[in-house]
Length: 83
Image 1: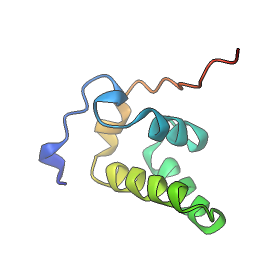
Image 2 (image 1 turned 45 degrees about the vertical axis):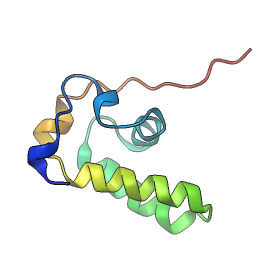
Image 3 (image 1 turned 90 degrees about the vertical axis):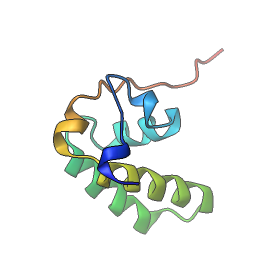
Image 4 (image 1 turned 45 degrees about the horizontal axis):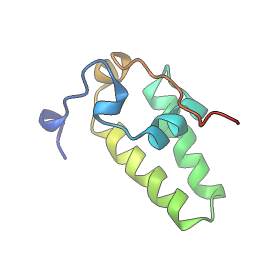
Protein backbone atom coordinates (compact mmCIF):
# COMPACT_ATOMS: atom_id res chain seq x y z
CA UNK A 1 0.00 0.00 0.00
CA UNK A 2 1.43 3.39 -0.87
CA UNK A 3 0.52 6.83 0.42
CA UNK A 4 -1.47 7.71 -2.71
CA UNK A 5 -3.98 4.93 -1.99
CA UNK A 6 -4.85 6.21 1.48
CA UNK A 7 -8.09 8.13 1.78
CA UNK A 8 -8.69 8.44 5.50
CA UNK A 9 -10.95 11.50 5.52
CA UNK A 10 -12.14 12.65 8.93
CA UNK A 11 -12.99 9.24 10.34
CA UNK A 12 -10.43 6.58 11.30
CA UNK A 13 -13.03 3.99 10.38
CA UNK A 14 -12.40 4.71 6.69
CA UNK A 15 -8.96 3.18 7.10
CA UNK A 16 -8.55 1.51 10.51
CA UNK A 17 -10.76 -1.17 12.01
CA UNK A 18 -12.41 -0.53 15.38
CA UNK A 19 -9.88 -2.87 16.98
CA UNK A 20 -6.97 -1.03 15.37
CA UNK A 21 -8.33 2.32 16.56
CA UNK A 22 -8.56 1.01 20.11
CA UNK A 23 -5.01 -0.31 19.85
CA UNK A 24 -3.70 3.06 18.62
CA UNK A 25 -5.57 4.85 21.41
CA UNK A 26 -3.82 2.66 23.97
CA UNK A 27 -0.46 4.06 22.91
CA UNK A 28 -1.05 7.52 21.47
CA UNK A 29 -3.92 8.88 19.45
CA UNK A 30 -2.22 12.30 19.33
CA UNK A 31 1.21 11.36 17.98
CA UNK A 32 1.84 8.92 15.12
CA UNK A 33 5.47 8.20 16.08
CA UNK A 34 4.56 7.51 19.72
CA UNK A 35 1.86 5.11 18.53
CA UNK A 36 4.37 3.34 16.27
CA UNK A 37 6.97 3.15 19.05
CA UNK A 38 4.40 1.80 21.51
CA UNK A 39 3.20 -0.84 19.08
CA UNK A 40 6.78 -1.96 18.33
CA UNK A 41 7.38 -2.28 22.07
CA UNK A 42 4.14 -4.28 22.42
CA UNK A 43 5.42 -6.77 19.84
CA UNK A 44 8.19 -7.76 22.27
CA UNK A 45 5.60 -8.58 24.95
CA UNK A 46 2.68 -10.13 23.06
CA UNK A 47 2.60 -13.87 22.50
CA UNK A 48 -0.88 -14.22 20.98
CA UNK A 49 -0.70 -14.77 17.20
CA UNK A 50 -3.90 -12.84 16.44
CA UNK A 51 -2.71 -9.83 18.47
CA UNK A 52 0.70 -9.89 16.78
CA UNK A 53 -1.06 -9.98 13.41
CA UNK A 54 -3.26 -7.01 14.32
CA UNK A 55 -0.31 -5.03 15.68
CA UNK A 56 1.68 -5.65 12.49
CA UNK A 57 -1.28 -4.69 10.30
CA UNK A 58 -1.76 -1.49 12.31
CA UNK A 59 1.95 -0.67 12.11
CA UNK A 60 1.87 -1.12 8.34
CA UNK A 61 -1.00 1.35 8.05
CA UNK A 62 0.63 3.88 10.37
CA UNK A 63 3.90 3.71 8.46
CA UNK A 64 2.14 4.30 5.14
CA UNK A 65 0.70 7.63 6.24
CA UNK A 66 2.26 10.97 7.00
CA UNK A 67 2.11 12.78 10.33
CA UNK A 68 -0.22 15.30 8.70
CA UNK A 69 -2.63 12.56 7.61
CA UNK A 70 -2.54 11.05 11.09
CA UNK A 71 -3.27 14.40 12.73
CA UNK A 72 -6.44 14.81 10.62
CA UNK A 73 -7.96 11.68 12.15
CA UNK A 74 -10.42 12.18 14.99
CA UNK A 75 -9.82 9.03 16.99
CA UNK A 76 -12.80 7.94 19.03
CA UNK A 77 -12.27 4.90 21.20
CA UNK A 78 -14.97 2.29 20.70
CA UNK A 79 -15.36 -0.21 23.50
CA UNK A 80 -18.22 -2.67 23.78
CA UNK A 81 -20.81 -1.41 26.24
CA UNK A 82 -21.12 -3.37 29.45
CA UNK A 83 -24.51 -4.83 30.13
